[in-house]
Length: 181
Image 1: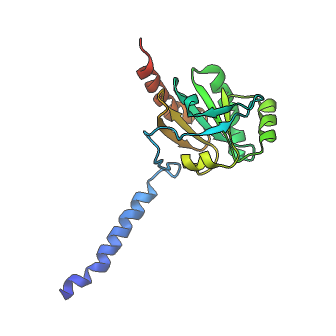
Image 2 (image 1 turned 135 degrees about the vertical axis):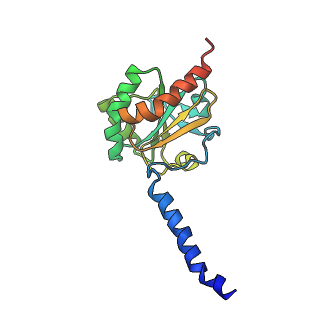
Image 3 (image 1 turned 60 degrees about the horizontal axis):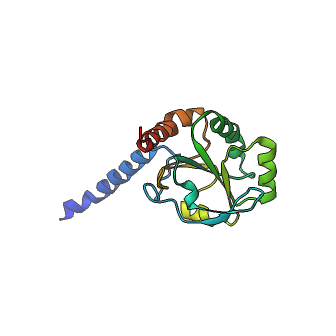
């Protein structure tokens, strides 16, 4: 029994080294979402549009949708914005924005000045929807299928590389499943 106790520090060291080794080779941008393959959280929030209509999760049903969490205070959102404009103009994908913990007037001015890639923008002034989504910060982008189920979460800027390598294959796959032809 005494000899067995001598191996306990070695066993602890091996376990810790295993965890460290695993952590070193994980993608730091990969943040798991508890909502993957679950319905988008229910919400009832105002639109950023002029008519101030109330939007809810039914907005995300019917088409494959990119849901982009953004804010005017977010430097990375400024970097991402031109690509989202290009994506909205050139690709067959719907983009819905969630304006996260932001000043509504500044957000409206930003979209007028820089262009609006969003078919609709939900105002999440208090961040409650973001909390339900598990948002770590902006920008974050979710792919939601035709039934309103979250299929993918990307943390960080969406650019050409991210679109081609990560998002587009998923969008195409979901669009093909929903296409009756």
